[in-house]
Length: 217
Ligand SMILES: [Zn+2]
Image (cartoon, rainbow, N blue to C red):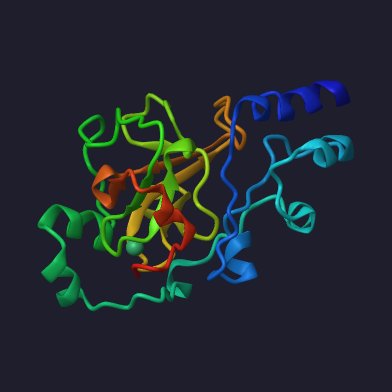
């Protein structure tokens, strides 16, 4: 059992390069918000010590879940008003980013977009959210990422439509991105799927943008 767990944890990591750049402008707690539980809740110490991508072991043991905050606890740095957002977003961007809408499955600009490098920024405030390395083919009809740039995405409980889901928003402006799902069995380092609306994103090949997440905020 132990060896199987280790193999399950480690085998995807051998083939993945996960960019883990601690963002200097984010505090420790925001960095933790991007950490996630391991693919298996019962994880051997041996596997933990061998896993190269885990930033803080303390965070690993403190909780099985990433911090999920109630939506009303949200207080992003970018506090533009509704009118200010309407002035800079097109109607579809406003509907999705500011009113938590969803684009139709399979229609998004980045659904079948797999660049070798680059960064997906928030379409609202331009904060870097995901890198090209985070993206994977999920077949779900929306862009899928197995992780975000540390601290760039905040999670909230979403109880709408009679379901308990985890909403993800841009940490800088609170713009709605989509939802994150765990434990679906995807062969990625996290087995998480950040299911994101293309409309919420703007891709750039300039990977240097990810080095300073709040530079353009
Ligand atoms: Zn944003």
